[in-house]
Each structure stands twice: as structure tokens, then as C-alpha cells.
Image 1 (spheres, rainbow, N blue to C red):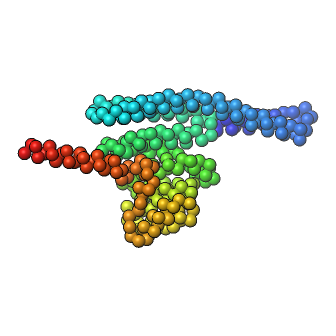
Image 2 (image 1 turned 60 degrees about the vertical axis):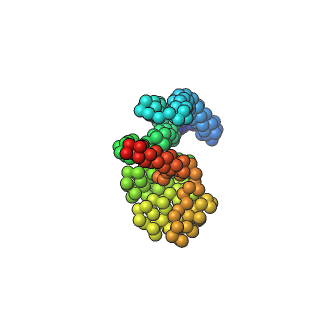
Image 3 (image 1 turned 90 degrees about the vertical axis):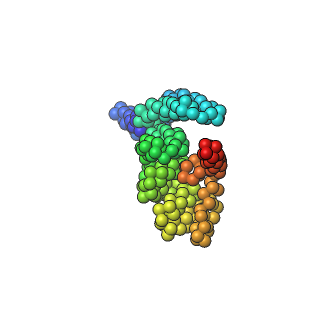
Length: 279
């Protein structure tokens, strides 16, 4: 926000100061406006470069983490290495937060990226560990929530809001999830997945009528055909087809993906074989 204040001050100074020497504001208004815009762009670009440098370092840590994960190895040392990379990346990103006072919306973007990064790791941990650590995720994603006209300007953060709702669901706080989704669908009504997620949470909170209402509103507001399909499914007392959203849905960890389900089934089968072997 400081960049906006400095730009306004520069513009006003360029308009008002010449009038002290008898120059009409009619002659200084447009030049003063140009000065203000120029100052704003200069400040934005200056701090944008600093932020990009920080994010580039964080991305190196994320890429290193992905390289470790792709090796397919398991064990405490592998998990420790993964978490070290994630925490390092999050720490680097959070280090850019002091710059947010100079750039409009930067705090929202940083908190969104940190929250999404941590959510994608924590949400897939065993329940006891997951629930103990999702508080940090919620804090970052809550910081991305905006209201009023400003919310439409930042509707690109809609998936962060979906993850916030999912985090609340994991913690058993369905009312908090629906509150987050109320703001999300108001800011980004065209995003059909938000409406389907809203209905999914309602169904799991035993609020069937509210789920139908949400999907009806979503079908009217979003061009997403999956919303209409889910509305029809719910009207016919059939399960919602969230799998149609692909990785965006599986990334919320509210249901196991086909790959995860197959892995869990294989682990259970291996466990049974080992138990029989011991007999």
C-alpha cells in the first residue's frame, strides 16, 4: 500500500506545488497524474524484482523436494528431507512478507502460496499429525480472505479458499468450512468447483437441502457443466461426482484418489500376507 500512498503524494505535489507559483492546475493536472503513475510503476517494479528473487530461491527448494519424492524411496530419512525442503521454501516465501506493505495484494499472494504449499504436504499426513499441523495452514489461508469489491479483484485465489475450506473439514469444523465457501462463491461465482465443494461439505454436514440450494445457485452462476451434473445427481439421491474435477479435487485430500486407494489396498494386502506368514 505504501507504493500507492507515495504515488498519490507525488501526483498531488506535481499538481499543487506549481500553483504556488501562479501556474494553473489545469496545466499541471495531466503531468501530475503521469508523475504519480510513473512513480507507482517504478516502486512496483523495484519491489517486484526483490520478490521474484525470493520466490526463485523458494522454487529451487520445491523442485529439490519434488526430485526427492520422484525417487519413490521411503523411510524416516526421506520424510525428514522432504519436510526440510518444504519448511525452507515456506520460510523463504514468508521472508518476503515485509515487502507486502509496498505492493498491493502481495501479502495475499504470499500467504496463498505458503498456505497451499504446506496444505499439500500436511493434508496427506496421518490424521494425528495432520490435525496438529493444519492450524498453521489455516492461519495463512485465512489471511487470503478478502471481502467486498476487493474480493472480485483477487478471485484468482479461489483455490486457496477451497483449500481453506478443506482444512476446516479435516479438522471437523464444517460450519467454518461453509463460512469460508460463502465468501469464496461470492468472490468467484464462475468457479464451478467451489459450488460443488460447497454442496459436498453440506452433504457431509447432513444439510441436504442447503446442498441442493448451493448447486442450484451455482448452476445459474457458473458455466461449469459439472455443477449441473452434480445438481441432477443430488436431486436423484446419487453421490456427487467430485472426481470430474481431477487433481484439483484429489489435492484437497477429502477423498483418496484412485492411485492412493490402490496404494492403500496394496499395503493392506501386504499386511495380511505378513500376518499369515507369522502364523
